Length: 154
Image 1 (cartoon, rainbow, N blue to C red):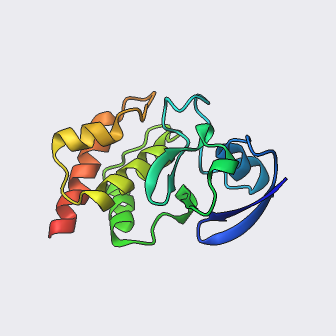
Image 2: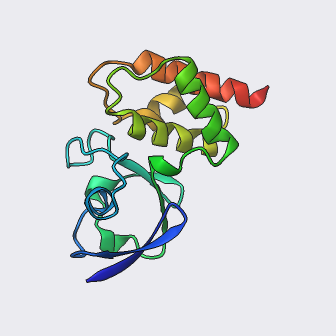
C-alpha cells in the first residue's frame, strides 16, 4: 500500500506495508541514512526523529501511525537558530567519538532546547535518558547541551 509521508518538509510516497517501521521507510525506501538502527526496540535512541516536533523512536513507529504528521530527520537539522547552535557547539566541543549515536543525540537535544531553552540539569537528564552511547560521551553531550542553552541566552 502507498502512504504519503511528510518528511523534512516534502511529501514522499512510500509503498510498503503499514506496519513497516518508519526507520526502514526512511533508510531503505527514501535513502535517508542519517537515522541509525540501534536496537529495534526503541531502547537506545539511535533512530530518534521528530514527529510534529517531538522526539520519536522511528524503529517502533509504524508508517501507518504517522498520518498527516510531519517527520524531521537529522538531514533537515540546521533550519532553526536552536538547531544551528546545537550543531556549532557539537563541533566546537568535539562531542562525537565514533558518532553512531549522534544523530539520535542531536535530535533529542534539539527537541529539548526548542521546548525548554534553559533546561535544568534534571531536565537534560530526563530528556536524554534512553539515548545510549557506547563510547561514553555523556559528559560531552551534557556539556554541549548546557553550552547551546547558555549561548541562546547571550
